Image (tube, rainbow, N blue to C red; front, top):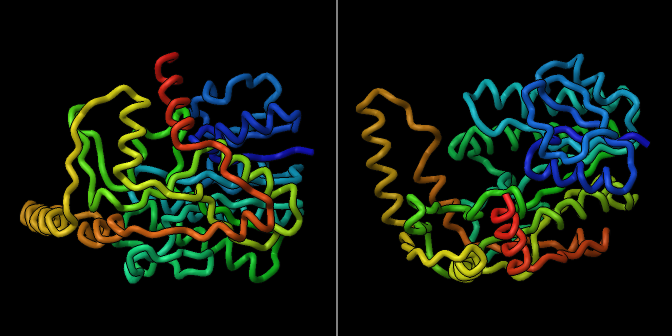
Length: 330
């Protein structure tokens, strides 16, 4: 059995490839010629197909002969044309190639970023049937493209074009991942943590190893076909709880500033005005993005637990310590 992974050198993709490789599965990775393959570890038994998601012929070469396709490839930076070509066009190309090749299953890696939280109440439970973002262009090119790409996948699913399933991980963290894994915040000059919203706002974390478990279970369980699943660890920590554990794991004593939403929204409004005066169009709607990022919600994971038997195995404390240890070793 040959398994294809697009986006193989990305954060989640590289962990998935390593795990698949360790199980003895024949793994094929689809990468650009400039990709850094060192993140995949031992590549001697990996099959590498070089190409680009914007090139239909190279996508066809990558997909042909594969039983299973994990489609994680997407643009993460650049102008809108890059997102339109790689994320949207690339997903369309993968769907068509998989259909023509008769793959046994295609697993699409989405994100909880596609949900519309603007009209949700605080502590709302977000289910897989909850509404998708109605103003993705107000958020970012990434969200706009991911929403459009997932709609292509859902359309193919509804039309029964091929066996499909969709995973929507939340804030993924772990070795080689972002640090700190804030949804709305940053570590200013390595001196102070700046976070948006209340200390009690929930952070929907999930460790990368648990995400990989979900991807593998999707293929192993027939009942996953045709389904969409949230992938979030239960018992989401608050921003205060996450920051406390992060400080301990990383050995950091930096102070933290929690900015109220109204203050950041006012700053965003002023920034928009300055950009317009300078003749530069602001990307999206900063106020809308901030309002969405400050939402504190929970995600329903009953589906993936009941259908696939998925359980989050890595605690936040252990996951952060693993991440800290990897930084020390590197």
